[in-house]
Amino acid sequence: MPKKILPDFLSLPEIDVEKVVRTGRYHRLLESRLARAPHACPHCAQPSSTGYDSRTVRLKDAPVRSIGITLSVRKRRLFCKPCKRVFTESITGVWPGRRSTQRFRESVRWAAENFTDLARVKRIYRVSNDFIYTSLYEGLAKRARERQRPWPRVLGIDEHGFGRVKRLGGGALVTMLVDFDSKNLFEMAQGRSTEDLRRQLAHIPGRENVQIVVMDMSDPYRKFVREFFPNARIVSDKFHVLRLLSPALLRRRKEILGDRRVHEMKRLMMRNFFALSFIDRARLDNWLRQNPELQELHAFKERLHEVFRTKGFDRASRGFERLLEAAKASGLPEIKRLRETLLRWREPILEYFKTGLTNARTEGMNNVAKVVKRRSYGFRNFQNYRLRVLAACSS
Image (cartoon, rainbow, N blue to C red; front, top):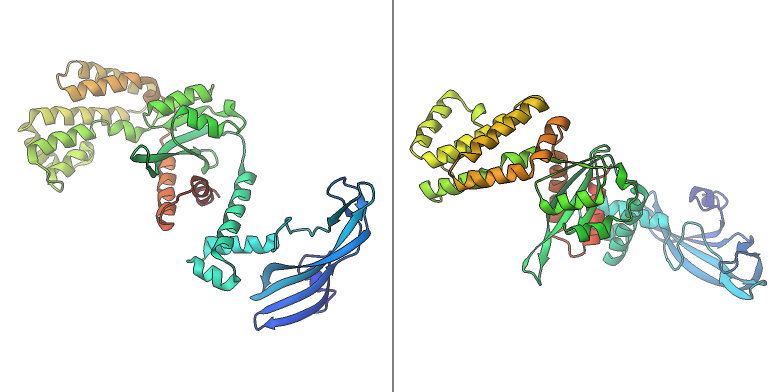
């Protein structure tokens, strides 16, 4: 390839290639120098072309058709007359203090994201593990900054476990915030308290844009939403409302049958009674009649399902009030706790019938985050984990 074409082919027009040296079967060394043109002084921004001395640096560049490229560039050190200081010429596409081009680092980042293992990346690009991780997270951080935008109109909030907190002996939590409009993960934050979330999310503009927040029935999240998003309405996730009685049902069932987790009645009891066949309904009814307290719990579970099968806000609101009245007359402590929970979350639960929104999208991205964590055999650094999940859950 002619020397005058090489710089344009490499997209480095400011470099004059003087000699191409074959240093291996799949590697080339390009001896070159920078075009002699005035450079702006980094200290005072005045252009200067007065030579002081020169230095030769070697830069790794992205492979060309599976051929590794190394640039040996002779750079001038220039003297700035206005400020009386010496500086070195800069090269477009090479950050200060780096020994590789940004194009090469982007190529390594792409390979680290798409290859099946890092050993292959290390072998093909002839770089260290540390260089691969540095390039990967630099690129992911740059992409995350470019995607940063104001708060969306509809937001989903949920949490999942990240690791263990040694001083507390329990699990650390990560909060996921999902943009329902763009169907992407918007941001992640460590912890779930109002103070933690406010500290990590305060820099994002447009809090007044958020009109609807979909979440489970979490008091810390409700407090955070009320204080942080002044115009937001809270919608309780349908799935979490419907499973309010599931722990009580399972506990009562275990008292009767023992720890028989594969018992058929457990499977029928936890399913939607409305969707069972006629024979399964009859079998479940006969078994529940032998356990009146369990039968009452199951009946309230089905009444809760019936409310959510109702079409229209007004009809659903009336069915919800009837459910509260029936729960008030019950003597079971589980039903009384259910009534207290429904009263505290009355407005967010009924908001579902106005919007029809659930937190299914956020739960799906929680699953993606868990897959990322498993594939990496866990993370110690939350910021690295955040960048990987943002990249996996954003288009």
